[in-house]
Length: 393
View (tube, helix red, strand yellow):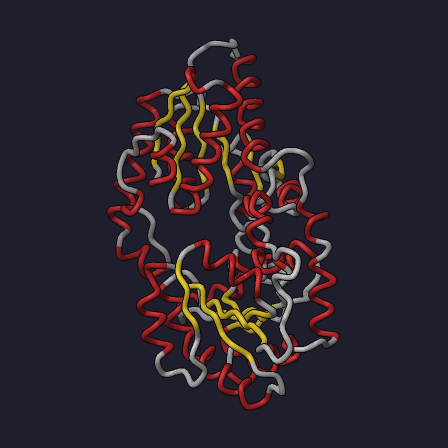
């Protein structure tokens, strides 16, 4: 790769979390390769726009979640897939980077590979091939030249399943440990102060609608059973804060509801325990050192999919630890009684609480990547793939 040769990199993300990853990758690529020689195109949101991307269309056009929502928007999404692939092929970039949202981004990558096989393709964020549909890993080899994995066990999973070459680049949360973890004394209690319990009912409307009722009833049972007084905080994503407030009106235990990232991390740093929906938040809690119980409910249609799941846990922290230390109450097990029974031991100094805290101390060692931060390592791998492809031409 000539030192000063202009480079065009297309980055295609499918939702807000991918937009954040894409923006950090763009920033690191500019620092590594020189901002003046880089041109970006693709699909992104506000964060990528701040780094200079003019998106083909608004990210909201494709950022839909849940089986029924995707089906309802399918014709529009298929049009956007064709539009994106057409634009990539026409632009003939030096590289295509796809980020997460595999139902959208992988279809774009497959179309580009068929029509312009000379364009190298890097996938940032592995699909959950280790949990379900493992056959996807082998199929990815046909259209992904290199995979950037966020979780430390994923390279071995792809090697075992016949997936593309994979590098663990670190989870973006590694860059935010100072915000997530308490400063000295921040989690301490004054005498008689109540225990601080976080409740996290999810970041999707479907999750909130299914979990707020059993969570509220579980808190009522906890109030009756716990010898220790406790207070509840719900960090709410802004677009669901109104619905969460409305649903919490009927709770006998009245929560404090906070919005915004700064308020969320402040609540994490002060929390003693948590009741949470399954998702990335379980890794955030583990890295913050907050013992938790994890719950989840899905629709009846989606429930059928559980028979395809191969992973030993749906909790990311359990998967990273390779040990099921965090209780998970899924679907029919997600009852107020079982939730209360599981949370109660975490409100005092018990073996259940200590087991989680001890396990969480291993996370840094399991997730560390040396002196680089995730976005820098990702940019380095992208640059190496570019150089290798240039050497072949």
